[in-house]
Image 1 (cartoon, helix red, strand yellow):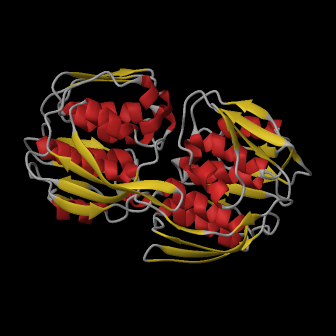
Image 2 (cartoon, helix red, strand yellow):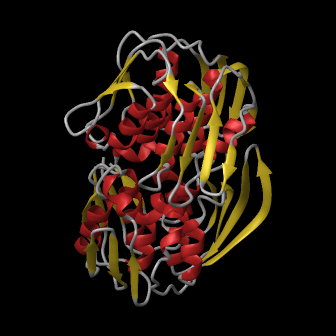
Image 3 (cartoon, rainbow, N blue to C red):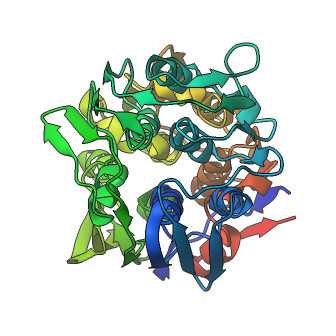
Length: 433
């Protein structure tokens, strides 16, 4: 499937984006391990989260839904999972695979985790190495890529681990493994990353201990308690209509019910520093997370040097930020973002190739990009099967002098089902074929 987008247009109206992908993954995982029935609304019915749900069904967990975003999970307890009849296929879900590796490392049965072509190229050494330190028996393909083979382990042991990179996936993997470990498991971050796992463990009755950048969980058989909550809209998905409204010539947009967890709002800080007219309205708490409506108006953006401390807080939003930077006056410098090299694609290379294809001057750096604001021309962009690259470059047509075509966009459904329809309703002249 390709996106074909006519040039020009304005963005206006109001919309809701799908439920938060990170929270949806974690909600199913912890509800499956809890005792009793958990219920969630706002669940993301995307390919990635459905793969996680299917994995737990294969291990004997009853999961009803999603029906209009509502999911009910009958938890089996910490030790109630059963060996699946075959490999668990995580599709394109890197979060699902890395978190499941930790959760399954302490089980009394073996399991193999597989994924699609893209996921099978993604690095897993970052979770394999610390899990082995905890005593896990885990194997992988050459280069420590999937499939991951986890064999039964008598007993994991808690470790005190300093993350070599800022990664919420690795942190969460080790905290979930810590549920099954003897003693205390601690993880120290080099920079703050999203804390959905910590918030959700507390909601399920297993609070953690935090001391600055160090977070710890105690092992043992203390059960998780079933709970229910609403999952807010995903700020990573909201990034696309948000940037569209900033760079369009006219209109005003209201994005309703978006999660504004402070470990995820780097995109708001970056775009405001660029001159973006962004306002948070109706701030409130929903379940375990802070939520707001976001009002956005067209803005004259200026290039900036992105503060390194904001990079981990906006790591998934840089494809959209790069399109905003291309529409800004002057130069935007992004450094400290080497994590972009190991996403669904090498996003530094994919962003640079897309900007170049559409006439924007860009320089790649080992850990980032230098983008010179300019004028998009029409052209063809390769998404490399990366959902966020595909969505980001569909926005470029708003400021292009000719139509833009983005190839290989089927994976948009992993995080933002209905993207083309929602954006068309707001004024983007997008067709999917």
